[in-house]
Image 1: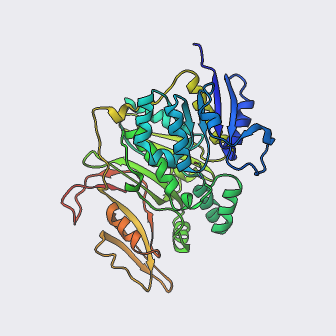
Image 2: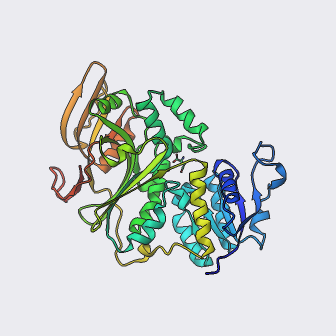
Image 3: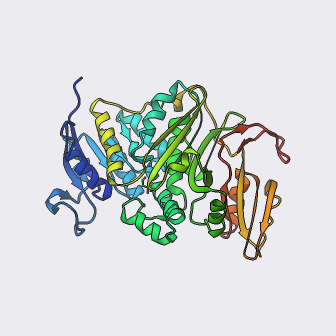
Length: 415
Ligand code: HSE
Protein backbone atom coordinates (compact mmCIF):
# COMPACT_ATOMS: atom_id res chain seq x y z
CA UNK A 1 0.00 0.00 0.00
CA UNK A 2 1.27 3.42 -0.92
CA UNK A 3 1.36 5.53 2.17
CA UNK A 4 0.72 9.24 1.98
CA UNK A 5 3.49 11.80 2.46
CA UNK A 6 2.53 14.15 5.30
CA UNK A 7 3.60 17.79 5.27
CA UNK A 8 2.89 18.94 8.78
CA UNK A 9 2.06 22.35 10.14
CA UNK A 10 2.54 22.23 13.91
CA UNK A 11 0.78 24.62 16.30
CA UNK A 12 2.39 24.79 19.73
CA UNK A 13 5.81 23.83 20.95
CA UNK A 14 5.22 23.17 24.65
CA UNK A 15 5.79 19.88 26.39
CA UNK A 16 3.91 17.73 23.84
CA UNK A 17 4.94 19.78 20.77
CA UNK A 18 8.59 19.36 21.64
CA UNK A 19 7.98 15.69 22.46
CA UNK A 20 6.49 15.18 19.00
CA UNK A 21 9.41 16.98 17.35
CA UNK A 22 11.82 14.56 19.05
CA UNK A 23 9.69 11.49 18.44
CA UNK A 24 9.42 12.28 14.72
CA UNK A 25 13.20 12.65 14.50
CA UNK A 26 13.47 9.13 15.88
CA UNK A 27 10.87 7.72 13.47
CA UNK A 28 12.45 8.22 10.05
CA UNK A 29 10.37 5.42 8.53
CA UNK A 30 7.24 7.54 8.68
CA UNK A 31 6.96 9.78 5.63
CA UNK A 32 6.46 13.04 7.50
CA UNK A 33 8.08 16.45 7.47
CA UNK A 34 7.33 19.29 9.84
CA UNK A 35 7.25 22.17 7.40
CA UNK A 36 6.22 25.00 9.71
CA UNK A 37 5.90 25.45 13.46
CA UNK A 38 3.71 28.29 14.70
CA UNK A 39 3.95 29.48 18.30
CA UNK A 40 2.39 32.40 20.13
CA UNK A 41 5.14 34.11 22.10
CA UNK A 42 8.28 35.18 20.17
CA UNK A 43 10.25 35.95 23.36
CA UNK A 44 9.85 32.57 25.05
CA UNK A 45 12.96 30.41 25.55
CA UNK A 46 12.65 27.16 23.59
CA UNK A 47 14.71 24.01 23.11
CA UNK A 48 15.42 24.79 19.44
CA UNK A 49 16.48 28.06 17.82
CA UNK A 50 13.96 30.85 17.02
CA UNK A 51 14.64 30.39 13.30
CA UNK A 52 12.42 27.30 13.39
CA UNK A 53 9.31 29.25 14.33
CA UNK A 54 6.68 31.41 12.73
CA UNK A 55 4.22 33.55 14.71
CA UNK A 56 1.56 33.85 12.04
CA UNK A 57 -1.08 31.10 11.99
CA UNK A 58 -1.76 31.78 8.29
CA UNK A 59 1.74 30.51 7.54
CA UNK A 60 0.23 27.08 8.13
CA UNK A 61 -3.46 27.52 7.43
CA UNK A 62 -2.98 29.18 4.04
CA UNK A 63 -0.06 27.03 2.87
CA UNK A 64 -1.41 24.65 0.20
CA UNK A 65 1.63 22.36 0.62
CA UNK A 66 0.70 21.59 4.21
CA UNK A 67 -1.77 18.71 4.24
CA UNK A 68 -1.84 17.97 7.98
CA UNK A 69 -2.26 20.35 10.90
CA UNK A 70 -1.13 19.13 14.30
CA UNK A 71 -2.70 21.30 16.99
CA UNK A 72 -0.99 21.14 20.38
CA UNK A 73 -1.74 24.46 22.04
CA UNK A 74 -3.39 24.78 25.43
CA UNK A 75 -6.00 27.45 24.66
CA UNK A 76 -9.16 25.55 23.71
CA UNK A 77 -10.89 28.56 22.10
CA UNK A 78 -7.92 29.46 19.91
CA UNK A 79 -7.51 25.75 19.11
CA UNK A 80 -11.10 25.56 17.91
CA UNK A 81 -10.55 28.51 15.55
CA UNK A 82 -7.39 26.91 14.18
CA UNK A 83 -8.88 23.44 13.81
CA UNK A 84 -12.09 24.65 12.16
CA UNK A 85 -10.17 26.76 9.67
CA UNK A 86 -7.80 23.91 8.92
CA UNK A 87 -10.68 21.51 8.25
CA UNK A 88 -12.43 24.11 6.07
CA UNK A 89 -9.19 24.47 4.12
CA UNK A 90 -9.22 20.73 3.46
CA UNK A 91 -6.37 19.82 5.82
CA UNK A 92 -6.42 16.71 8.00
CA UNK A 93 -6.03 17.56 11.68
CA UNK A 94 -4.50 15.79 14.65
CA UNK A 95 -5.17 17.32 18.06
CA UNK A 96 -4.73 16.48 21.74
CA UNK A 97 -7.14 19.15 22.92
CA UNK A 98 -9.83 17.32 24.88
CA UNK A 99 -11.56 20.49 26.12
CA UNK A 100 -11.96 21.75 22.56
CA UNK A 101 -13.21 18.41 21.25
CA UNK A 102 -15.67 17.91 24.13
CA UNK A 103 -17.06 21.43 23.90
CA UNK A 104 -17.40 21.47 20.09
CA UNK A 105 -18.00 17.82 19.33
CA UNK A 106 -21.03 18.22 17.05
CA UNK A 107 -19.56 21.10 15.08
CA UNK A 108 -16.25 19.26 14.61
CA UNK A 109 -18.14 16.23 13.37
CA UNK A 110 -20.10 18.41 10.95
CA UNK A 111 -16.92 19.98 9.61
CA UNK A 112 -15.26 16.61 9.07
CA UNK A 113 -18.24 15.50 7.02
CA UNK A 114 -18.83 18.76 5.17
CA UNK A 115 -15.19 19.10 4.08
CA UNK A 116 -14.48 15.37 3.86
CA UNK A 117 -11.33 15.53 5.98
CA UNK A 118 -10.24 13.49 9.00
CA UNK A 119 -9.78 14.77 12.53
CA UNK A 120 -7.92 12.36 14.81
CA UNK A 121 -7.40 12.77 18.56
CA UNK A 122 -6.09 9.61 20.19
CA UNK A 123 -3.80 11.76 22.37
CA UNK A 124 -6.80 13.56 23.87
CA UNK A 125 -7.81 10.57 26.04
CA UNK A 126 -5.42 8.72 28.31
CA UNK A 127 -2.36 9.79 26.26
CA UNK A 128 -0.48 6.57 25.44
CA UNK A 129 -3.44 4.17 25.79
CA UNK A 130 -4.96 3.49 22.35
CA UNK A 131 -8.48 3.68 23.71
CA UNK A 132 -10.35 5.77 21.13
CA UNK A 133 -9.48 3.62 18.18
CA UNK A 134 -10.28 0.47 20.16
CA UNK A 135 -13.68 1.78 21.20
CA UNK A 136 -14.33 2.99 17.67
CA UNK A 137 -13.31 -0.21 15.89
CA UNK A 138 -13.18 -3.23 18.15
CA UNK A 139 -16.34 -2.82 20.19
CA UNK A 140 -18.58 -2.34 17.25
CA UNK A 141 -19.46 -6.01 17.41
CA UNK A 142 -19.05 -6.65 21.10
CA UNK A 143 -21.68 -5.09 23.26
CA UNK A 144 -20.19 -2.75 25.79
CA UNK A 145 -21.89 -2.55 29.17
CA UNK A 146 -19.64 -0.01 30.80
CA UNK A 147 -16.35 1.74 30.63
CA UNK A 148 -14.62 3.33 33.52
CA UNK A 149 -11.20 4.75 33.84
CA UNK A 150 -8.52 6.65 35.60
CA UNK A 151 -8.21 9.15 32.77
CA UNK A 152 -6.29 12.02 34.35
CA UNK A 153 -2.60 11.51 35.03
CA UNK A 154 -2.04 14.57 37.21
CA UNK A 155 -4.71 13.77 39.77
CA UNK A 156 -3.65 10.14 39.91
CA UNK A 157 -0.08 11.29 40.49
CA UNK A 158 -1.18 13.75 43.20
CA UNK A 159 -3.34 11.16 44.97
CA UNK A 160 -0.48 8.69 44.88
CA UNK A 161 2.13 11.14 46.18
CA UNK A 162 -0.12 12.44 48.98
CA UNK A 163 -1.36 9.08 50.22
CA UNK A 164 1.68 6.85 49.63
CA UNK A 165 4.58 9.28 50.06
CA UNK A 166 2.83 11.75 52.38
CA UNK A 167 3.61 14.82 50.29
CA UNK A 168 1.30 17.77 50.81
CA UNK A 169 -1.33 18.42 48.17
CA UNK A 170 0.44 21.55 46.93
CA UNK A 171 3.86 19.82 46.82
CA UNK A 172 2.39 17.00 44.77
CA UNK A 173 0.62 19.44 42.43
CA UNK A 174 3.84 21.41 41.92
CA UNK A 175 5.64 18.19 41.00
CA UNK A 176 2.88 17.26 38.54
CA UNK A 177 3.27 20.70 36.95
CA UNK A 178 7.07 20.43 36.79
CA UNK A 179 6.81 17.08 35.06
CA UNK A 180 4.50 18.56 32.41
CA UNK A 181 1.49 16.46 33.44
CA UNK A 182 -0.85 19.21 34.60
CA UNK A 183 -2.84 21.60 32.43
CA UNK A 184 -1.72 25.27 32.33
CA UNK A 185 -4.74 25.87 34.54
CA UNK A 186 -4.34 22.93 36.95
CA UNK A 187 -7.85 23.34 38.36
CA UNK A 188 -9.00 21.71 35.12
CA UNK A 189 -7.27 18.59 36.44
CA UNK A 190 -7.96 18.85 40.16
CA UNK A 191 -11.62 19.82 39.87
CA UNK A 192 -12.32 16.96 37.45
CA UNK A 193 -13.00 19.00 34.27
CA UNK A 194 -10.24 17.34 32.27
CA UNK A 195 -11.52 13.87 33.19
CA UNK A 196 -15.02 14.95 32.20
CA UNK A 197 -13.89 16.21 28.78
CA UNK A 198 -12.19 12.88 28.19
CA UNK A 199 -15.29 11.01 29.32
CA UNK A 200 -17.35 13.06 26.85
CA UNK A 201 -15.10 11.86 24.03
CA UNK A 202 -15.15 8.27 25.28
CA UNK A 203 -18.96 8.37 25.39
CA UNK A 204 -19.10 9.23 21.70
CA UNK A 205 -16.81 6.40 20.66
CA UNK A 206 -18.03 3.81 23.16
CA UNK A 207 -21.77 4.38 23.05
CA UNK A 208 -22.37 6.75 20.13
CA UNK A 209 -23.51 9.53 22.43
CA UNK A 210 -22.80 13.18 21.86
CA UNK A 211 -23.25 14.80 25.28
CA UNK A 212 -22.69 18.38 26.29
CA UNK A 213 -19.94 18.17 28.94
CA UNK A 214 -21.86 20.61 31.12
CA UNK A 215 -24.54 17.89 31.47
CA UNK A 216 -22.11 15.44 33.06
CA UNK A 217 -21.77 15.45 36.85
CA UNK A 218 -18.16 15.77 37.92
CA UNK A 219 -16.34 16.06 41.21
CA UNK A 220 -12.58 16.41 41.43
CA UNK A 221 -9.99 15.65 44.08
CA UNK A 222 -9.67 19.18 45.44
CA UNK A 223 -12.02 18.68 48.39
CA UNK A 224 -10.61 15.38 49.61
CA UNK A 225 -9.68 15.84 53.26
CA UNK A 226 -7.85 14.05 56.06
CA UNK A 227 -10.94 12.13 57.09
CA UNK A 228 -11.30 10.47 53.69
CA UNK A 229 -7.58 9.69 53.56
CA UNK A 230 -7.73 8.16 57.04
CA UNK A 231 -10.85 6.14 56.10
CA UNK A 232 -9.03 4.80 53.03
CA UNK A 233 -5.93 3.88 55.05
CA UNK A 234 -7.94 2.15 57.74
CA UNK A 235 -9.80 0.03 55.21
CA UNK A 236 -6.75 -0.65 53.05
CA UNK A 237 -8.12 1.22 50.06
CA UNK A 238 -6.84 3.91 47.72
CA UNK A 239 -8.71 6.93 46.41
CA UNK A 240 -8.77 7.26 42.62
CA UNK A 241 -10.53 9.75 40.38
CA UNK A 242 -12.74 7.63 38.13
CA UNK A 243 -14.66 8.54 34.99
CA UNK A 244 -17.57 6.19 34.58
CA UNK A 245 -20.16 5.44 31.89
CA UNK A 246 -22.53 2.51 32.03
CA UNK A 247 -25.79 1.24 30.69
CA UNK A 248 -28.43 1.66 33.37
CA UNK A 249 -31.53 -0.40 33.98
CA UNK A 250 -33.52 1.27 31.23
CA UNK A 251 -30.72 0.63 28.75
CA UNK A 252 -29.64 4.26 28.75
CA UNK A 253 -26.28 5.66 29.74
CA UNK A 254 -25.31 7.31 32.98
CA UNK A 255 -21.95 9.01 33.15
CA UNK A 256 -20.03 10.85 35.84
CA UNK A 257 -16.59 11.64 37.22
CA UNK A 258 -16.13 10.98 40.93
CA UNK A 259 -13.36 10.10 43.35
CA UNK A 260 -13.75 6.50 44.44
CA UNK A 261 -12.41 4.23 47.16
CA UNK A 262 -10.66 1.37 45.40
CA UNK A 263 -9.98 -1.78 47.43
CA UNK A 264 -6.65 -3.56 47.42
CA UNK A 265 -6.50 -6.08 44.61
CA UNK A 266 -8.80 -4.13 42.29
CA UNK A 267 -7.29 -3.51 38.86
CA UNK A 268 -7.28 0.25 39.43
CA UNK A 269 -5.41 -0.16 42.69
CA UNK A 270 -2.22 -0.89 40.78
CA UNK A 271 -2.64 2.09 38.42
CA UNK A 272 -0.37 4.53 40.20
CA UNK A 273 1.45 7.76 39.52
CA UNK A 274 0.89 9.25 36.10
CA UNK A 275 -0.54 6.01 34.74
CA UNK A 276 -4.09 5.80 33.44
CA UNK A 277 -6.27 2.70 33.20
CA UNK A 278 -9.54 1.88 31.50
CA UNK A 279 -11.77 -1.11 32.21
CA UNK A 280 -14.29 -2.13 29.59
CA UNK A 281 -17.09 -4.41 30.73
CA UNK A 282 -18.48 -6.29 27.78
CA UNK A 283 -21.36 -8.69 27.20
CA UNK A 284 -19.37 -11.57 25.79
CA UNK A 285 -15.69 -10.97 26.43
CA UNK A 286 -16.01 -10.23 30.15
CA UNK A 287 -13.64 -7.53 31.36
CA UNK A 288 -10.78 -5.91 29.48
CA UNK A 289 -8.22 -3.68 31.09
CA UNK A 290 -6.08 -1.08 29.33
CA UNK A 291 -3.21 0.62 31.11
CA UNK A 292 -0.47 3.06 30.14
CA UNK A 293 1.05 6.44 30.83
CA UNK A 294 -1.69 9.06 30.85
CA UNK A 295 0.28 12.30 30.51
CA UNK A 296 3.72 13.66 29.72
CA UNK A 297 5.59 14.67 26.60
CA UNK A 298 6.56 11.34 25.06
CA UNK A 299 3.49 9.24 25.92
CA UNK A 300 1.24 11.96 24.49
CA UNK A 301 3.49 12.49 21.47
CA UNK A 302 3.41 8.75 20.87
CA UNK A 303 -0.40 8.91 20.46
CA UNK A 304 -0.04 11.88 18.08
CA UNK A 305 2.55 9.86 16.15
CA UNK A 306 0.13 6.95 15.90
CA UNK A 307 -2.55 9.29 14.50
CA UNK A 308 -0.07 10.64 11.96
CA UNK A 309 0.82 7.12 10.97
CA UNK A 310 -2.90 6.33 10.60
CA UNK A 311 -3.32 9.36 8.33
CA UNK A 312 -0.66 8.01 5.96
CA UNK A 313 -3.10 5.24 5.11
CA UNK A 314 -6.16 7.51 5.11
CA UNK A 315 -7.66 6.33 8.39
CA UNK A 316 -10.57 8.34 9.78
CA UNK A 317 -13.15 7.81 12.50
CA UNK A 318 -16.43 6.71 11.00
CA UNK A 319 -18.50 7.42 14.14
CA UNK A 320 -20.58 4.38 13.29
CA UNK A 321 -22.25 4.24 16.68
CA UNK A 322 -23.37 7.85 16.44
CA UNK A 323 -25.29 7.05 13.31
CA UNK A 324 -26.20 3.46 14.15
CA UNK A 325 -29.64 2.08 14.89
CA UNK A 326 -29.32 1.74 18.63
CA UNK A 327 -29.67 5.33 19.79
CA UNK A 328 -29.04 5.53 23.51
CA UNK A 329 -29.88 8.43 25.80
CA UNK A 330 -27.79 10.00 28.49
CA UNK A 331 -29.52 10.46 31.83
CA UNK A 332 -28.77 10.56 35.54
CA UNK A 333 -30.92 7.60 36.59
CA UNK A 334 -28.40 5.89 38.74
CA UNK A 335 -27.99 5.35 42.46
CA UNK A 336 -24.52 5.45 43.92
CA UNK A 337 -23.20 4.24 47.22
CA UNK A 338 -21.10 7.06 48.63
CA UNK A 339 -19.12 8.32 51.57
CA UNK A 340 -20.28 11.87 52.30
CA UNK A 341 -18.24 14.13 54.58
CA UNK A 342 -19.84 17.24 55.95
CA UNK A 343 -19.01 19.84 58.53
CA UNK A 344 -19.76 18.42 61.97
CA UNK A 345 -21.24 21.66 63.25
CA UNK A 346 -23.18 22.71 60.17
CA UNK A 347 -25.19 19.62 59.53
CA UNK A 348 -26.74 19.95 56.10
CA UNK A 349 -30.26 18.69 55.63
CA UNK A 350 -28.78 15.77 53.73
CA UNK A 351 -31.36 13.26 54.90
CA UNK A 352 -33.88 13.96 52.19
CA UNK A 353 -31.21 13.87 49.48
CA UNK A 354 -30.24 10.29 50.34
CA UNK A 355 -32.23 7.27 49.35
CA UNK A 356 -30.93 5.41 52.39
CA UNK A 357 -28.24 5.95 55.00
CA UNK A 358 -26.14 3.00 56.15
CA UNK A 359 -23.63 4.46 58.54
CA UNK A 360 -23.36 7.74 60.40
CA UNK A 361 -20.21 8.84 62.20
CA UNK A 362 -19.24 11.93 64.17
CA UNK A 363 -16.14 12.60 66.26
CA UNK A 364 -14.81 15.74 67.88
CA UNK A 365 -13.86 17.26 64.53
CA UNK A 366 -15.55 15.46 61.69
CA UNK A 367 -18.69 13.82 60.47
CA UNK A 368 -19.57 11.50 57.64
CA UNK A 369 -22.36 9.27 56.46
CA UNK A 370 -22.39 6.44 53.98
CA UNK A 371 -25.44 5.53 51.97
CA UNK A 372 -27.19 5.52 48.61
CA UNK A 373 -27.89 8.71 46.71
CA UNK A 374 -29.02 9.48 43.18
CA UNK A 375 -26.49 11.14 40.91
CA UNK A 376 -28.83 14.11 40.53
CA UNK A 377 -29.13 14.65 44.29
CA UNK A 378 -25.41 14.17 44.76
CA UNK A 379 -24.71 16.95 42.29
CA UNK A 380 -27.18 19.25 43.99
CA UNK A 381 -25.86 18.58 47.48
CA UNK A 382 -22.28 19.03 46.31
CA UNK A 383 -23.08 22.39 44.73
CA UNK A 384 -24.75 23.69 47.87
CA UNK A 385 -21.76 23.77 50.19
CA UNK A 386 -18.02 23.90 49.63
CA UNK A 387 -17.43 21.98 52.88
CA UNK A 388 -18.93 18.79 51.47
CA UNK A 389 -17.03 15.98 49.90
CA UNK A 390 -18.19 12.79 48.18
CA UNK A 391 -16.25 9.64 47.48
CA UNK A 392 -17.89 6.72 45.80
CA UNK A 393 -17.78 3.48 47.76
CA UNK A 394 -17.38 -0.06 46.50
CA UNK A 395 -16.24 -1.13 43.17
CA UNK A 396 -17.63 -4.46 42.13
CA UNK A 397 -19.26 -2.90 39.04
CA UNK A 398 -22.47 -4.79 39.69
CA UNK A 399 -25.46 -3.28 38.02
CA UNK A 400 -28.90 -4.39 39.06
CA UNK A 401 -32.40 -3.08 38.90
CA UNK A 402 -33.42 -3.18 42.53
CA UNK A 403 -36.25 -0.74 43.19
CA UNK A 404 -35.40 1.91 45.70
CA UNK A 405 -37.41 3.19 48.58
CA UNK A 406 -38.06 6.56 47.09
CA UNK A 407 -38.13 5.85 43.39
CA UNK A 408 -40.77 3.83 41.66
CA UNK A 409 -38.71 3.66 38.52
CA UNK A 410 -35.94 1.10 38.42
CA UNK A 411 -32.59 2.74 38.85
CA UNK A 412 -29.34 1.02 38.23
CA UNK A 413 -27.36 0.57 41.38
CA UNK A 414 -23.61 0.51 41.16
CA UNK A 415 -22.08 -1.21 44.13
N1 HSE B 1 -3.44 17.21 32.33
C1 HSE B 1 -3.71 15.99 31.68
C2 HSE B 1 -3.58 14.86 32.67
C3 HSE B 1 -2.75 15.81 30.54
O1 HSE B 1 -2.99 15.08 33.73
O2 HSE B 1 -4.07 13.77 32.42
C4 HSE B 1 -3.03 14.64 29.67
O3 HSE B 1 -4.28 14.72 29.06
